[in-house]
Length: 125
Image (tube, rainbow, N blue to C red; front, side):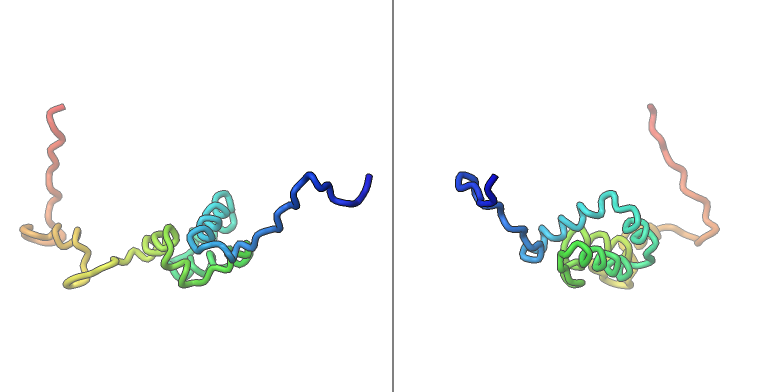
């Protein structure tokens, strides 16, 4: 039982620093780590806006040693989409800053809030 390495076996690879990976891969590692992380998911659910979510994700990233920055999180999917959904802000607004689906809903309808709901045709089947 010698303490010398076996020449027939290759040297084990040194542990890789996750900060050397591309941003997309580091975000993928973060997302996988969030799956089943009860406390982190509860903290994300309690966030009232996207900035608070990013703070929780930055903390998780630092604990994992991923070295993600705020800017990298905000511009990389799926985190970018989660933040957008939490803020519920339009990517592009033209006109009076009212979402398009709300603009179309008022077109051609008289009255206001006391208006009766429209009847729906459910079909023949």
